[in-house]
Length: 159
Image 1: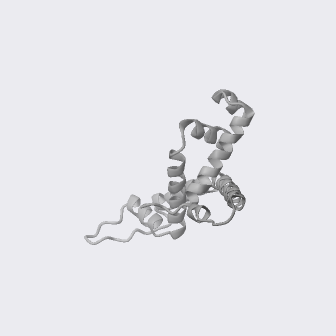
Image 2 (image 1 turned 180 degrees about the vertical axis):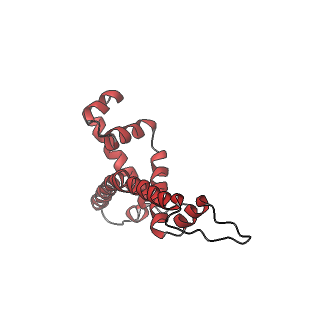
Image 3 (image 1 turned 90 degrees about the horizontal axis):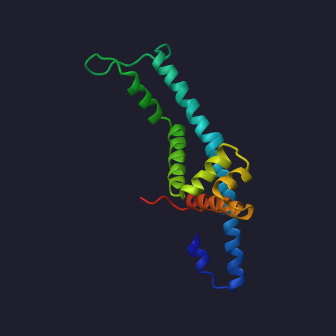
């Protein structure tokens, strides 16, 4: 996407407008991803894990198939089979893993800001005080985090 912006053959003002719009889109995407990660994906995964484990480990709901040789499938293996065969669960864990990889690439200071301000709900001025940041610098770093997460999410996965 950046290459498309770099290759614009119009005036520099037009290119700058496109870049600004792209940065805004990344910022909005990053903000939405941060919220989805902490408020939807993690709680949903924990809930699904708890439900599946309760069903499988209680032994009341599922009858374990006998594997060749006559032994029942161990509960841990059944858990793994159920999770691996669910496209929704695999998608959820893929999103969580991808987001954790993006977060891991943030500086320690930005990870602290992300954890305290976004996830723990500590007021901005308290986080800024701990990090010795002015109000302006705090919000600039917050926007940098949101933009970075949105940009990285939008980039194709390398592999």
